[in-house]
Length: 567
Ligand code: ARG
Image 1: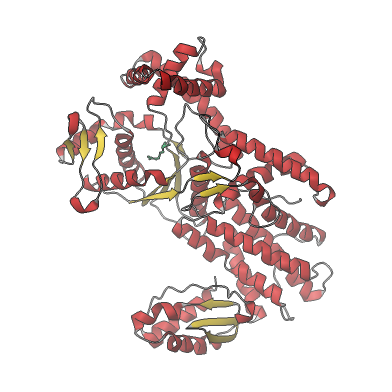
Image 2 (image 1 turned 90 degrees about the horizontal axis):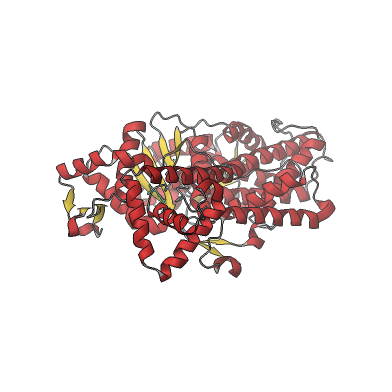
């Protein structure tokens, strides 16, 4: 985006300041009176060049002013360069950037990027908090794919662990002889909850559960059958939820997948002197003084493997199988220390590993006290999604005539599910994420319904004009209004925003952008007649409407949302 400007600015910096590869980004000035785009590059390189920012900025402005398509370039503030483009140049930039809105062209890499996300521990149903890793991970995956990366999405299911022992004990005691299939997910959950209640009074239960899990680990045939059935029952339910959320994986490799892949690693670790015998015969990895990392246990004293053992096997398997350039772990910040240890342990093993990154996110809290104080019981994701759809449907009903739809159930679904997902993805993942029904379902402000409504509005204009989304932008013979310029300026930032969101793994940057685009489009729509305009003016306005619709849809889908054509 603004590619020719960027190229020119780089040339100037290279020629006049001997700075060949400056990183140049463009921003929209807050006040449109300050130009169409602005760069702070002079401020950023002044230290390196040992020159005053204003001096650099002024050289840049002088040269940029004579670039074709630039109407004016000025120094502003401490060393910003503000640039005004001609209407023809603005529209041409926009026309050119339109291919980038839909096509994935940036890069084709042979070594894939692995994104691991969702990873619920099964035998328990999905809780609302599981949605965080699930949609953040899917959005990041979508961003990589959009940019042409070979991307592998993996669900590292927690399908192994003491929860299966607990469930086995609970079924034996209170399951009335039913199988997992007969009990179904709800029955299993009830038993799981019951186990925890009873275990508070009866401490022996925990030991029984551990013993039952040990039997499973030792290959007991009956336990294995039971385990397989529980996995199947939960997976079937899980698949339905993923489908509702437009989430999908290339591989579902649960922790159980690595059962037979741990032994060689334990041997390798011992042979290389990385795994030491610690307290009570456990195997641990120790880290150098300065790292402040506590020892990392990879085998219990009784010979049982751990979550960590499976993670080491997972890295090894992925490296051998896929030769990735990067592995991302989209996991709760609570496991930050754990991942530091894992990555440090991998380093000690001296495997030829790619970049390993923990893409962490904060906790989820609730504006509604009823949601946060549900004790003992899990707030199930499915329940929240159903409620979102119900609430959306009620809003549609209450709005009456002002919402037009031929298919109310599907609009309610799109709106309700979109609201939940967007409510999460529009917040900075590093912060604690607040879940607030009123905010996420609002028709104003940074919400899915607002975005969906704006998209439908743009589509409605295009329908009335009988114009498609690929409507071409003409080279106008008329000047542009301020609102048109603002809208174009925002649209032009889209590729840059996507790139930033990808590089930082921050999907909320896309959401923020879509929100400001909606605001700019609605301001334009409310002030400038589109269908009633004539000649080039009408053509330009329809073109901007078409661009807005495409960008909103593309951006929304990257965030796993769907947008309606009518609303
Ligand atoms: N299932 C784990 C949990 O719920 C998260 C898995 C994270 N991924 C990993 N490779 N350790 O805590």
